[in-house]
Image 1: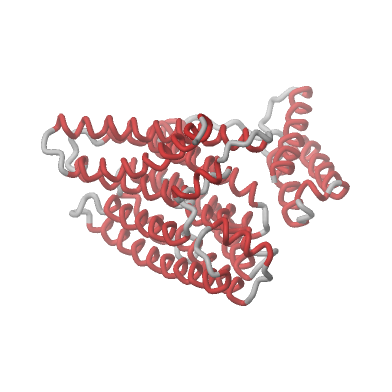
Image 2 (image 1 turned 180 degrees about the vertical axis):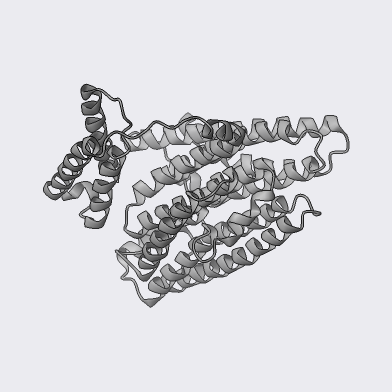
Length: 441
């Protein structure tokens, strides 16, 4: 007879799974809403559902903490028959998506009120959110693949919200073609992994990968998975559509840049235990991701449109995130993914205030000699610390060099007029933040 703990754990997981299913049902209901009052109720219920997903994710996270502390909860056993894979990655991503979904729906309800695209926006937005949640929750590669395609197809309907906008239609179809290339690459990766390990379930896949040496199928799967991630994350030379879809409404841009475009990175973070060490796929991510980050960040500085600058910023950040995955800094890549999603959602939803803020006078930089007197010692101190304790960056020299340079470049942006004790504080904060990132990585 099941005890109270088993019933509680099963109830939490059932709620976790019920939310994306309910969002899909609500998408159908909102599409058939015939009056403004019924449509308004659909908006309200949808926000309650995404808020419920946030609460359920917190509860699952609490159960994971109890498991880590040695308190048996039976979470993995209860999740298996429900088709769920509750781990730290799934919980962090679920918290992110449910929070963004709640805020986005609240913003979009007012933004699109009375607009001719309001009735089409809500159903397809709910399909996107539900598909992303299923992609995050599932323990089965085939379900993950179906959800991946579902996200892309539903997003296409949002990007073509206004059929009369020719440029938006053309950009959306360009994105559609690139997405299908990514879909094919992910299908190939899943089939190769199945051919090597004989299972689609994540727990069995990871167990088999830990005891079985990788073959050519795993190496080829890493390349296919890298291509899928490069397509989804709009990396050079497949980035053109991301810059051209700016005619979509602001809520659609926020959903794309904060919750959808980073799914290529999530799939890599989900499947990285399958790949032992650096594979050809890792090298592909390093080369293309690093090149994209350099090109996009320099192009971003030349943009006069806020939305275009944000689009190039997304392209650069996704390149850097994939570069981090390529060098094996998976924890750092997850932190980057979460931080970028929150930052970019705020940037798009507050783009009007961004224009106003950009008109403010910028603080002039401190004299070069003063900035170098802080940046050079901080960089040297970070480099020495990483040479003494290379385990802080998992013995990854390239990542250590990048973190040391990041600390120095941060201090090179010191504004003029800061007193000596404040400069010392900035120095300590720069070194401290670098140490914190090293520990996290």
